[in-house]
Amino acid sequence: MKPANDPAVDYRALVREGYDRCAARYEALRREEVEPDLRRLIVQLEAGTKVLDVGCGVGIPIAKSLAQHFEVTGVDISAEMVRRARENLPDATFIHADVLEVELPVSNFDAVVSFYALFHLPREQHDTLLRRIHRWLKPGGYLLITVASENEAPYTEEFLGVTMYWSNYGLQEYETLLKEIGFELIEVTTVGHGYKPTYDTREESHPLIFARKAEDNA
Image (cartoon, rainbow, N blue to C red; front, side):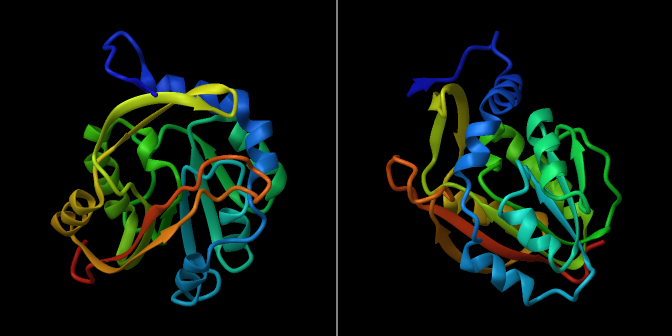
């Protein structure tokens, strides 16, 4: 683990290029089944509604499970991840774009999910992304997002054979921020790392926030 504080380094580019390079190994390690908390979201939505997956990766298992019920759009910064997602789920829509720059319709989605993605952005930009998500959601729409437990300074670390970047606040800061933006918190649970049991790595626990955009929010 190394501090990631070099102003000459484009850490968003590092993430994009890193996932392009490790996409095959990443896909091979993803779990086939979804976490129970995703099913909690599924039962709240009517069939055919619109769901956005932010940081969709290769589309397995999150977008794949959602696409069995809903009209799914995925966004990811990695061109190779998006290419694989399109192969895995040809009936869904996948956009290769930076989530801080992509243009999506306002009040268009019934739910937004984002697993293991927020902490790859510089933490000073997390507020911006969460406000963008809030605009993309319909009033009353749901958000299901993994965050981090502890406030950690940005760092890089080896990940699936590449150098990867992480940056995050702690759970309490995210809860406060979401309320300020206009979300109503429903529940906070935890999930693991989302890889197959054969993946030899340390155990991980990620807070998973289930929230809802207030009905009176445009």
